[in-house]
Amino acid sequence: MNITVNDRECSAQVGDRLLDIARANHSHIGYFCGGNAICQTCYVRVLEGAELLSPMSDAEKAMLSDKLIKEGTRMACQTLIEKPGKITVLSEVEAAKRLTLENPLQLPAYMGKMGWEAAVKFTDTIAFQARREQGEHALEPTQLLHDVAAAISDAIQLVFNAVQAAFGVNRSTDKPEIKADKGCGCDTTLLAKTATCDNGHGRIVSPEVLQLHQERSAVCN
Ligand code: FES
Image 1 (cartoon, rainbow, N blue to C red):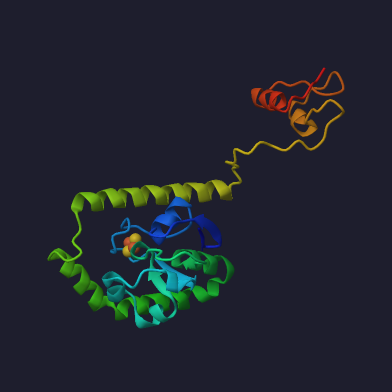
Image 2 (cartoon, protein in one colour):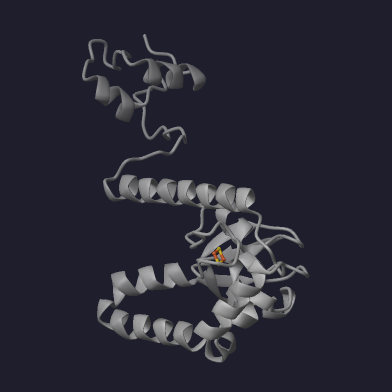
């Protein structure tokens, strides 16, 4: 089955955690604690298919305000797919990013709201984390360190990708499409890059262009 995370189609299966699906498909989502119900950055709004997801966990009951729950908010690290069907979610970090780009004047109000909703659950959140110290939903330090390191490394990769995209670096490995030829099958767009033409077609000098040329069985005399 597929689910949609931040408008991106992601492959998923019953039993998968929303956080893991988003990570596997490089969808923008927060998870600085590595999925251990600490950082509260993995909030997602379930736009469709809430009934297909696992019931609220103790962590979510402790951290999510009534208002956020009513709006369909879940914690991606706490939510599993229980039944197949159409599921659409928008992560809170992606929503904030879109607001920043499209409507920055609404950002202070948004931040105020999220801050307030966190504040009203502050006592419950602290009580929940304290109970973990005493054994309930306990954290295993080595696993926690490993999860946090993985989360940071993924975050760095996302930033790196975003910077590359911003500067127009094309990481695609797709082969360029042949757009035109002069009767011999040569890609005139690529051949133009070699800037040498002494037989009416073009002279292939770059290994990359040569390989492409051979793969397409083009003949250039
Ligand atoms: S609370 Fe940190 S990933 Fe969910």
